[in-house]
Length: 153
View 1: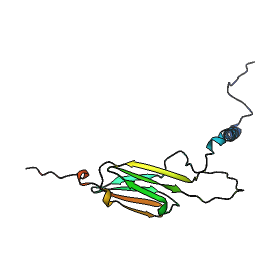
View 2: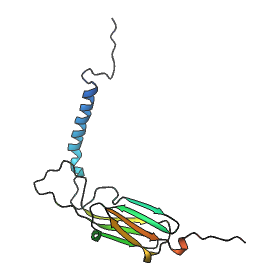
View 3: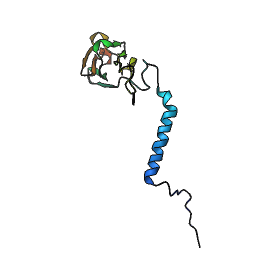
View 4: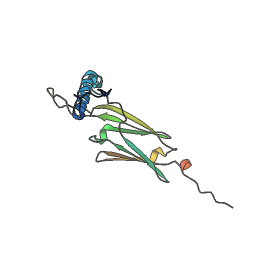
């Protein structure tokens, strides 16, 4: 008589119970490491805020930043020769004192983002608008940064 043995087979661990076990382990890890995710009020989570797209055409650079729920007066924009700074304070109203969070991903606090622009800009002609949570900054290129057409003789 021959006994066949599978080294990693556990009859009590079927397909569904394996996922239940993984879920149990994940919940335990969340309990153990959950305190690491509790940051002091006013600090934003790790990551980049605001999310930004930087594009250009022949004459201008365009910066579009996602700033949902923010007011224009809470946003500061400044520019130098080849960089743009967007900063401000994100305010989120309190949910109350006796509130228990199940998930907290939106944080309030100050932020600052500096973008290096690909070339020199004309800082005196920069325009900005803030519509439906999207900040759009139109940045004219400096004359020295614009491509020049050279005539061949």
